[in-house]
Length: 424
Image 1 (spheres, rainbow, N blue to C red):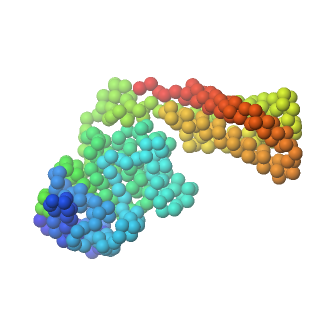
Image 2 (tube, rainbow, N blue to C red; image 1 turned 45 degrees about the vertical axis):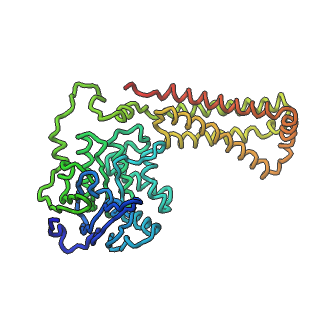
């Protein structure tokens, strides 16, 4: 191993490996993945660990990330001997000290960028309002302030990696571990991610350990550690690491005359270009109007056809609750699902916008009747439901199901009509 002087004199190391070995028993033989590795990384360094497949760099990453324990030797992280700690104790240290960035992004596909970034804070028990505030700030810091409500399939590969970086940053960790963060990205997008990592290292003093098998990626680090056969063979400081932002600026520009999506890097970019505009607020008002008309028609049917007294006295309670729930439901839907560009999102919006106000209005009405002492209003209704259940409960349940299903379908078609995807 080629020894190097500490890059930051006088500062205690955040990572220190002392004669660490890792062995795996495969039954018939023992695989030595790491052999007596000693390594010290100071606060604020940007270190690249390089090696071919089987060199031991992934094993080292697992040990540095507290995902595995060394067979022998000592691993100290931020002054804590984590090598000897049990799994739960290591998990606590990992959650407090380390942020992870993976090659495959590891984002939840059905949740928004904001919700993905909030996830580590949920494990810490942070309140919902504080989670949203900190996750929004993290996404803004990586240049995704306008993509908060987008799901991963609406983002390009580079944007997904930025979401992963924001998720790693949201807990304010002093150490970032990046495992092949550019492995799935093209040259331009890789340089964008590396430029962001360099900026975080310079401006915020975050220690970054990047594992890669590509020398041109490692050239952006201030220190390069090379592994071979489970050992550190070289450990070299780079006086002038490659500046990713400069290299990005020197890349040839995309053809300005091409279509707006011609420069996009992969299929995810094309999907992102088809995101619809926010649903007009008037669409929600139209759905609310339909709900109100349905309440009035239902009340009239109960009063005039079935002669149920409950409708004659209290239909205005249902009407008022429908108006309030429709208004708040519209605000919630527009904020939470402002870009329903996928069929799944449109269906979920239509379903919840139908079921939640209907259920809530019914519960509010029943609570009002009980609190007001007008239980007798419900007697005709209960009597009717009882006779209907006795004569044909399946027919009654089918009628309710068909009514709700048709309402959901009509609202789904309405959302599709007013929020189409952009052409690719």
